[in-house]
Length: 202
Ligand SMILES: *[C@@H]1O[C@H](CO)[C@@H](O)[C@H](O)[C@H]1NC(C)=O
Ligand SMILES: *[C@@H]1O[C@H](CO)[C@@H](O)[C@H](O)[C@H]1NC(C)=O
Ligand SMILES: *[C@@H]1O[C@H](CO)[C@@H](O)[C@H](O)[C@H]1NC(C)=O
Ligand SMILES: *[C@@H]1O[C@H](CO)[C@@H](O)[C@H](O)[C@H]1NC(C)=O
Ligand SMILES: *[C@@H]1O[C@H](CO)[C@@H](O)[C@H](O)[C@H]1NC(C)=O
Ligand SMILES: *[C@@H]1O[C@H](CO)[C@@H](O)[C@H](O)[C@H]1NC(C)=O
Image (cartoon, rainbow, N blue to C red):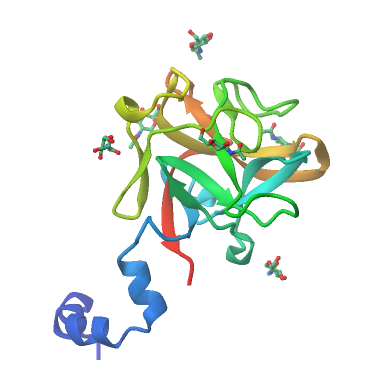
């Protein structure tokens, strides 16, 4: 009864792939030219911060930060355009194809209890769009040599921290907020370095 999983996998690998529904086959071959969701895979730190789906969190007019949710239905759709991560949105009066840009300013999140060296991730209409992103298979990667607009202390590292609310809605209580990590920032038990993994929207 207890057939080794390895043997079983080898025996059924090909017919299984052929039989997969389209949605799962698409996941196997990630295509960054099509819209996708992003979720965390902890590279260093507590596994409690694994599999959080990135979603936008409104902090001001046309201005959001990025938080993680375990509920994949709350994931926002992203596109990659000229090495910039964007969230396409339908906004009344906006030109066709309007999208918010991901921007990584050298700034601490306003009023947050995130550790020092963990800086705000901004998604909206203000701030300079950060360039240099691409995908290595389905994992988001970043090339310093191609980035003309990234802060000096960014080396491609993102982190998720458990914070006690996000400005201006501290009363919401505990949240998982995405930050970019300065290259000299310390580790924190509230945080984990994360890989961001893409999966195409069905
Ligand atoms: C995790 O972070 C610690 C502290 O910075 C570091 O010593 C260790 O090498 C890191 N591990 C990995 C796998 O990156
Ligand atoms: C997940 O999010 C969706 C969309 O916001 C919501 O309808 C659903 O109730 C949520 N599920 C759970 C378990 O919170
Ligand atoms: C997004 O960034 C691009 C490239 O810098 C810029 O042309 C565009 O205006 C930005 N979009 C918004 C909504 O800020
Ligand atoms: C960097 O930019 C060059 C020129 O546009 C491009 O050919 C190359 O693929 C880019 N590298 C990465 C890692 O995105
Ligand atoms: C958030 O508040 C809780 C309860 O007061 C506390 O245990 C935790 O350390 C706080 N988290 C941070 C990041 O300060
Ligand atoms: C990291 O470098 C910045 C800029 O040089 C400095 O202001 C900051 O204190 C440093 N942080 C740590 C934890 O060393």
